[in-house]
Image (cartoon, rainbow, N blue to C red):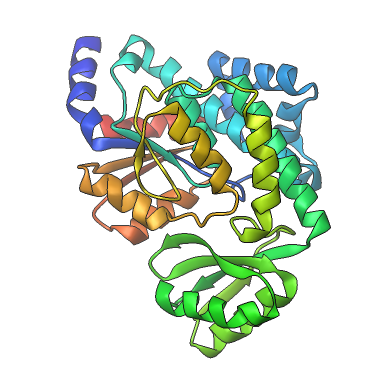
Length: 328
């Protein structure tokens, strides 16, 4: 059976990409079923607790929700769950896991750190420390310059970009996440964001949803945090990628550690171009996207980007069992 599985994986791997979700996908209870059934996943959670010096795993499994949603906690928590699910997947495959090397890995904003662990660029403890600091700096910036974000549905990107330009007379606001055709998140200080929301509705937006965040991620407000994060990151070692990583802000394929380091710093204040990132992988021949981590946000977005793309979401023990359909 293993010989057959290896052959099937070898045939499929050029068509498969692993993608990892970002902040907003967290929920109380995430990771608990994987930890219950997988020794490899439990090891990841224990490593997370030991590295950070507090019971991050208990926060993932049991909350409370307000602690888990704190940016400083949510970022390492999502990373830990994603890497735990990846470890459980490798454990389930056994020796065949070495053959399942996806063509690309990619992540949405914070999810890029999970992708970098999967690609061998970052050791898991290093990634944990980096995202904890990333979350701290973003939270600190939000306390100094309160901001917000809103998902705008039903406007094309060009129209929304024009809306943001008009609203900048009130302050800083810009597109933050180009998530899928017709769904873009905008980000900025509170006054300019409110102005942009009103203009978007006037332009015919089908729906505008304020996100439950108090930071203006992926906007120029994060420039100072980016500079501080670049300094913090200079103390950590990054390896060249063993699996090509598709940038979520430029949609370019990255392998070099130096290029990836610069990317992680710029990512804090640069728009996430998820639609372009997915399309780059599709153009390169990817037909199947495996979302690894809590929730199914990326699975939903990818389906909107290309209805022909095959998507599999693996975030708990049940979906881990079901996810092997993609090998057939």
